[in-house]
Length: 161
Image (tube, rainbow, N blue to C red; front, side):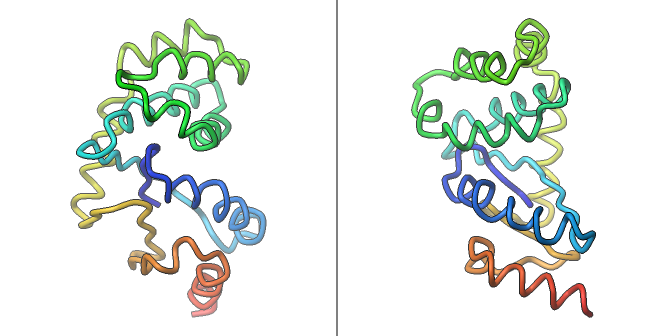
């Protein structure tokens, strides 16, 4: 899954579709989900820093909680004229993270290279929008990605193949 933290469709996928996939297919061993950052900085100016913030939260074992919080609060932080670092610090504290450690990681851009490498990998695969999902190396049609039933059926067909 190639995702952008400022993308409303990615928020929908992450908050509505992914939890059902995890519950129904990941938990049974039929599916493994790998998430790649794909900040579309031409339209989402805070997507890169948001991806780095989530990875910094991951250093304290809270990646997925932070990931979900960023999408839940998308309208709150994404419209800020400047980088929403205060919001991101507040979310870290809300999740019980060590704020100083989190802030050092984010301000030091500890994960800038990782996020950039993810984006470049997506570009190599000709990803042009988000969310983009690949299943066993094949791109899933965009109209299927946000439709849980259609996506689950496609996965079940692939697993049976």
